[in-house]
Length: 290
Figure 1 (cartoon, one colour):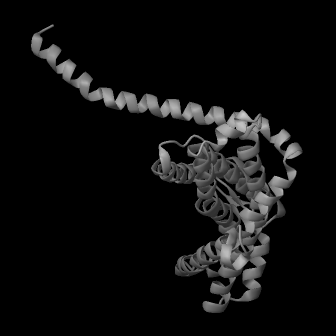
Figure 2 (tube, one colour):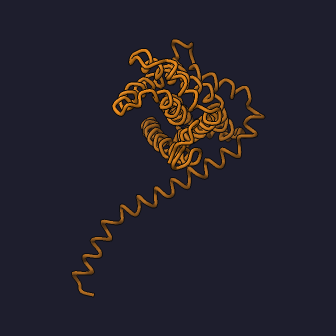
Figure 3 (cartoon, helix red, strand yellow):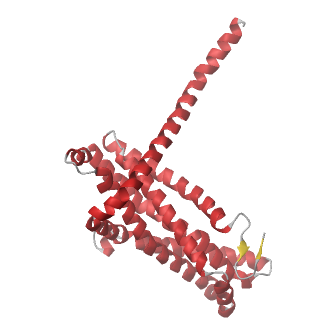
């Protein structure tokens, strides 16, 4: 092998080394997260049995905030506002697109499909990540750098069970009313835009809406919201529980947790839609589809 070729290979190896290290680091991080998720899942039954009152308090904080409803804000108001705005956008753009091809009477079917299957679960997941998940990361991260988590372990209190598994159960419970509030807000907003603002027949809208919203779709949509809430809570608690580097490290952990949870929401949403309704879904009530 010639000397120039050896030198070229050495140069390429040195340049590729940081990429290999990043790849190995990402794989190690994914393995650590997966192990953390399994450990939390194993602690859930005992968390429910041992810390029921703590879970109830966490559910109240997630839904209504730690202060009063007006001062603390709570997640319910955030979910309602986000769902109403996005539902209105579905009404505006969906009606306009259907009207261009002469299918504006199907606006009710559009609302039933889009709001139920995609909008409500995703909005609930994003609101949970933005308002609740980041709070979890900051709380656990502050406890980690203040060595409070180590103190719990030293007192024989299983910190993973008390701090993470309880938050997991609380988010799982709280997302149900959050999802229902968001679903109601999106339905109301889309109907208001289509019927009131654009003059579509209310009876026509309601007929196609009820035709395309079977009860099983709502149950599957709720299941999707529960899965998204689980992923969001696990991701944020992981980064908070493993935070380090002082206050700056907690801020970095919160940012990484939010990015990770949003990616997980989008990926899980696509996979769950394929699993629940197929790659070529049918139109409920008509049998039409791919």
